[in-house]
Amino acid sequence: MKTRPILIAAGLAAVLLASCAPAAAPAPALAPSSRSDAAPASPTSAARPASGGTDAAKDASPVTDRLVIRNARLTLVVKDTQASLDDIGRLTAESKGFIQTSSTTKVGSGLRASVVLKIPAERLDGVLANLRKMAVDVTADEVTGQDVTAEYVDLQARIKNLEAAETQLRALLEKATKTDDVLAIHRELTNYRGQIEQAKGRSEFLVASAAMSTVSLTLVPDSIAQPIQPTGWRPEGDLKRAFESLINTLQGLISALIWFAVAVLPVLLLIGVPIYVIARILRARAKARPARVTAKAATPPTPPTP
Image (tube, rainbow, N blue to C red; front, side, top):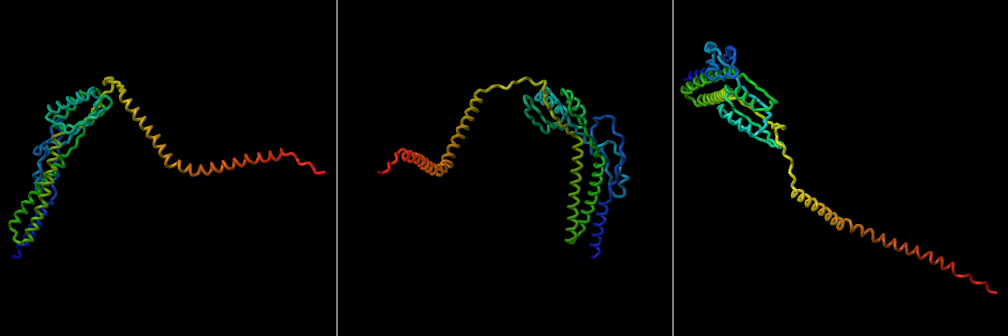
């Protein structure tokens, strides 16, 4: 009975070692086809993943096609933005693609549009050629490609190794009798299943990205082609703005009067009234003093008594 835990521990160690074995490096790829619009490789044709362990190099086969994610970005000057949007919609439908996002902004008398298309990779070059023909001028033109073949091959090899390790763990789980052993194996199974799902999700994303290219378009209206549209005069608008200005002016004057009557006038009265009374008293005294001097000067002197 003591040998069973030892066998289970040895089995877990063997599974861990097998799953950690390095995946075989992808074999050198053939030169890419001379056709620039070649479709990206499918998961089966892009690469044949290694089986893992020491036999990985024997099972690996040469990559016949590259898995390339191609995207494009164009800025087009067009005569009529709305008509160009309609043409782009028809072209996208004919190419078995779809419009991911679309937005328009009014610029003067024209429209500026931003559109993101998803186009099958094998039709990308044809769609780009037709888009360029729609434009009066192409002010920006960029096509990029990202080769993800090596990453895809590595992911497939990793998935195969993880699935093999998962199978061995399930076999050990059937033989385990102790609770601790069952829990330990179950934790490892959960960990491996998470890694498998993550690797598969990334692999599927690469394939989908390579199958459908992203085209980002910016449509700019041609200022020369836009019709002359003079700004119309709206007298009712001017009248309304004039009344609003008059009301604002009157409100300002009334507010100033209220502030003056409440905050300024009492202070002026408190200070000004005493000053005015004092000034009146001083002025009255100043006038009375010259009158007394004049009256005294006009009185004749009294003659001396004999």
